[in-house]
Length: 449
Image 1 (cartoon, rainbow, N blue to C red):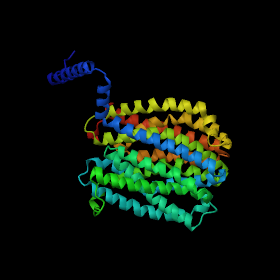
Image 2: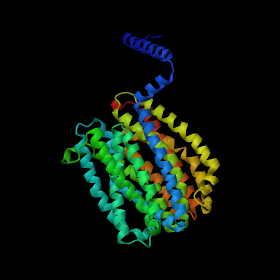
Image 3: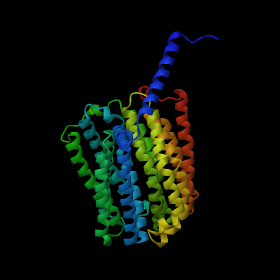
């Protein structure tokens, strides 16, 4: 049998020695509270993921209380109308974003002109928000909002502007791997959104919706203050045409992929209210808020993972394993709890909301598939497989929307369509991730991107 060449033997022996040395170092490290804390502080993925998860815990708790306040103080019909308007807001902000949020996470960390880059993107998103907000306000009657007027249109357009700006700032903190800023501004957003509906109970569904605008305004002001004081960002600076040089393909590809992928979340509330009425819309609103909480855990960790991978220079396998461990470690017990306690959770919102029990349980089971979707989606995005991501998300959106419009006769049917879309997403996302792994011999490196 032919022996390996000398340089191959030396490389192999050197790798073996390094593995032995690393193993001895790991064995020599004593796991004390101090050493665990030091390792946590030094590991930016876990540190930023923790900040994002604390932020998620605060915003979710506040969101849960927000929904309870709305369902207790406002009629089910008013909650249903607000659901349609909030769904339209989410879709409008996704369109107005134009892929800038993901572009910030991908490129801002290594930029030498951060202030110019941020101001350029703020200007583009601001102009887009005003145009999209006005265009959407012309379609309110199609969304089932028969009571909409000029004030509704103005409040909606302002909410799109400030909501899009807030989302952009969220991702600036993530790109800088300083998620503590996100924690502060989202906490202020949650507090403002909680208080406002109580003060304007007599205004109907607009009282619920206007809370989104008030919270976003507070968050934007807080973000500007933090970014100026702690990170040295300058906002009184001229935008740069070079800021987007060489990034448009990634930006537009990410935008189309994320926009299409978000359609099931953004457009289903509109479809439910327009087709099944505001009462069904209220039931869907409560169930999807709980599901969005579970999905947001995967989203928060995958965002931190994406920022780490974008700033890495070697193998990204470590970040993938850490993210998987964190996601499943949190989601599995939470999903079991939601499934088991679904009737009791829904009763908190009011006696009529127990009708969403089967919807909540069905969607909870398949929310676990979202872990693999978020992980492989981030990897595909890192490798700029935007066309494949767009195709995958388009398949998901088509399944969900067609099923909701053509087959579903109640919210249980809408939930079945959502599940079918998640299954298709899982197959295509995981398939794409496995393809990349095989192509790169099972080891993914940032330097190859």
